[in-house]
Image (cartoon, one colour):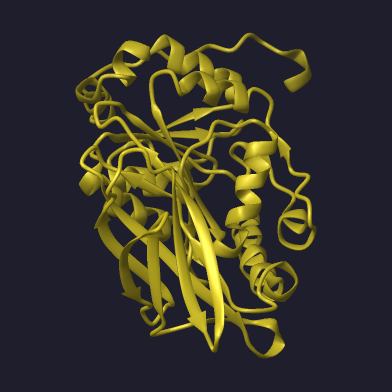
Length: 310
């Protein structure tokens, strides 16, 4: 019940905070993109604007132009939900950023995002953000200029170590107007750089698991080695299960809502040891799939007894 109330609060706070946080005027948001070795990628942008009472309105039927430097990559027209999607091929492997522009009533909007190039041979680890890598202060995230949410102990060190063997993806249901703030928080705390995918529909705040299922289904068509997910909620566990990937849930208490397919771990130190002890299996896509299917055993970590926790 507490989780349901927290998610509901996030949805209402997000809608109510749009004016203060980002939407006093039309805003163009551009997602990070992941380029395949041949340069093929999917570019995703959305436009939001303020209406009465500070609510966010999707801006429909507006063309968004995408660029890589001076070269135009194409144009996509926003759908009913204000989202513009363009499939294209990046012309140069050295391109590190992409840009998007849109004209709203004579006002030019601009946005920029990063380009990431994954090694298709490596396993991808999907990471939730809120209450997974940090203890999220939602009031700070939504209303304050600076987000003072505290990173969990060992989270940054663990993820930094994982970059030696894995590709990383931050997948969060935070609304798109928080994308730049999320990038800033991760960078300031020296978390490893990786693509960040945020939600672009208000309904995704209340149906976070459905949102993550949809994104993972789309991404796995191009990147089948998305095979491990780390989260903290039952919705994360369900989304990872539906996607056919290993579900690691940070929780100090057993919860049947996580499902039998999930591995529960109390903290990031345990997760770091788990990855180290199972490196041979988890870095091999075929062996990792066998582990997800219950055909390959994994070594679990026994944490020493701590009187303070009992």
